[in-house]
Image (cartoon, rainbow, N blue to C red; front, side, top):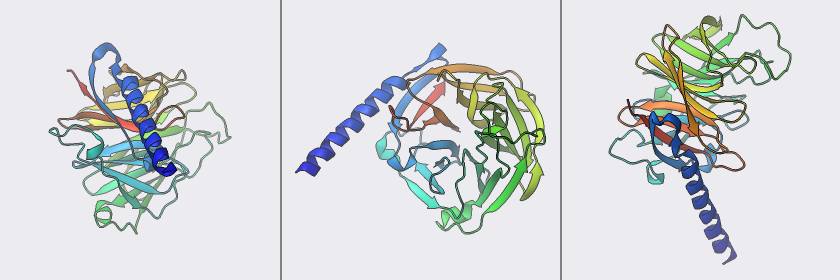
Length: 294
């Protein structure tokens, strides 16, 4: 009987937390985007750190220190299905890798790429991207994983420190290249680097820069625009966009929310943008969708 009472109380708390989160996420400033719905993520995805939509499934994973797993969230792409708890099915695929600091996930027609390049203290020399065949994932048996290792040629100081410009939590694919957008703690800019999609070790090529004046946590490419998410030192959350290739025309909108930190973004046709937030002491991990009014 005590266990039953505890379970009912626990479920009631989760329900209240969900309602509070809905209120916290329900206003996008300047009204450029319309808010769709907030739903809690399963307990096993409490530190979601990136999103990728492959045409049928939204993929995510936890960041550093968690098990090496990726999760598929189904039915979020269907414009006739409203986002709710019943439409989230957790599918996890354990991977033969170590999650040092996974911060981004993306893909192309044949592979999923996981960015193990989180570098908060600025002292890492083992930055890499894991390349996993989608056929292995479909067979629920990941055995072979390719690795793309890289470094930033501009970085010469590898002392552990807080203010530096060589952290990264964002990447996307275009053509035969991987693009990285840095998370600059020191100047709040973001440098754009390019890498080949092939196995090997490479110096990342610096090809552009822009100034979001906040810390970039994820990015996705939609047609000719890059969409980014992030937060500033005051805890305010943002979504922004810039032009691919010219790296100009940057615009941003504030997303009003309490005690949240947006960590992932992807675009689902007919649905809009899916964003994810990680768990904090006063807030559960969850996802929500927004649509542009334009």
